[in-house]
Image 1 (cartoon, rainbow, N blue to C red):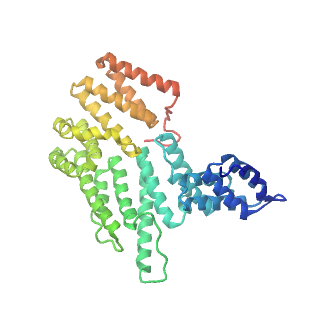
Image 2: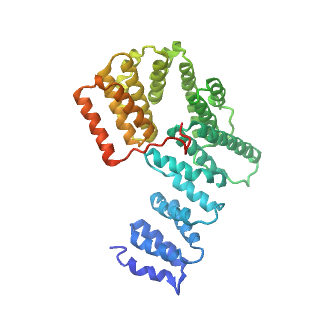
Image 3: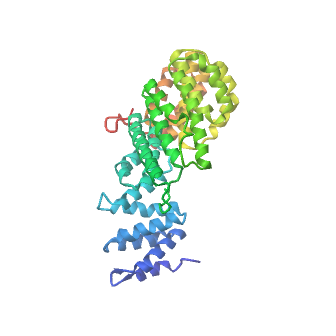
Length: 402
């Protein structure tokens, strides 16, 4: 089979302890494609003893990445991160960016470590990658509920998108100019700068300030250089602005908008989950009934359990937790405890210590209302956590967790 003699070829990549780049690069690339990790490890070990080994390793990572072998490239980018001595080098920043961008985990602790590792290098990236990096940092801080940091990154994203937009306008008549190479249209970064700033302010209770930034992305039809994808993004931002305007009204206690908000959610099914969270939070805070709303969206709520992406799993936890409190506050204890248990399962799945504590506290406060079956489910979950020691609790002193 292909690759069975590869272990013998490692020596061929080194001549009198000198590296043959012509041989070692394609060899490492092919080993990565075939999963020959032993050959890669041996070659890298010898390569790191040579002069300028990271030039080769970074080149291998980039070639694998550009061939669409993303997962295979991550191993080589990590070696660059671990061994680069020049903290200001662009290849170090890009290696951090690649590792950060393709992080795939539900674990909140891993997400936090990723933010801490990548954040110092965000300003050393080329502008096109900076836009993506700042957008990802802001979105990840949203998942981590680090609202003040999220606001900082949103400000940086908005400022950079504005600067790049003005630069592109000035260069628009130059036929020799290089095209701005970004994963998304520029209007997406511009709009998200305002959207995510507004969300961070909303989460900090600064509702009037949030309204100002909501207006900033409500109508982006004036934005020039829009292709079809950009036009779709403008329409999506308009939709977000309508939904988030309802959110702000609800959070300020304006119960009169509930029927209009429900009608809006019914017309836009993708907004139902985040919308229900806001409705439940408002109902719990201002103590009004939303039984009709829960009944109206009962069928849609059944499909929420199919979500696998981190953002929607976090949203599902928040919805279940709010529903649990609402039902308990209204004397529906058994159903409320069911939702506590479901919330607890999700907090364990995402390894979110703060959410775990909130669920345990809420259950213990209402333990007397739990059935024997519910108490056994609860004990089973707690035993699993004790066995795996999975949940990590941080008191927030080191990382300013809100």
